[in-house]
Length: 129
Image 1 (cartoon, rainbow, N blue to C red):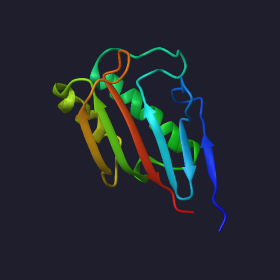
Image 2: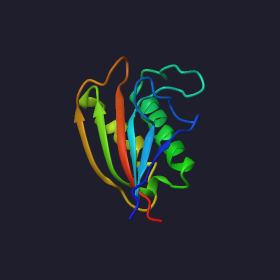
Image 3: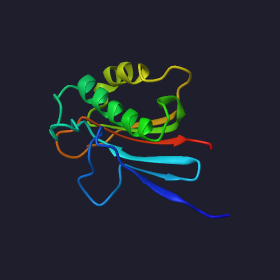
Image 4: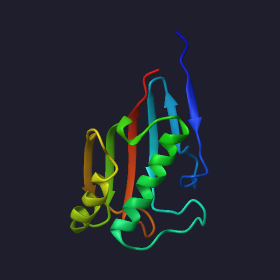
């Protein structure tokens, strides 16, 4: 059986700023790199408000999924890094609006994301052929 990996890129999501890919599809799985609250058009961090930054992060993740013909409901695992645990309720409120049929497994913790980011999220999607 041949093994295949495919690098995924869309200009509708935050562009990588280092030696990594937005996402990599390996077989039936899509691994989405840590996604930060940067507007893909301007390249600037969005407003320093947790709800706005969370929305930008999940809009980028949604754009990456759309690029491979998937939806947010294809996510099976999400990891959320919050700058401040007190932002949990506001982040959670925005997070819930992105899922319609079920919620993926999730881990969330307080840990300083780089720069002025209040939130940084990576995810795994299951995309059976």
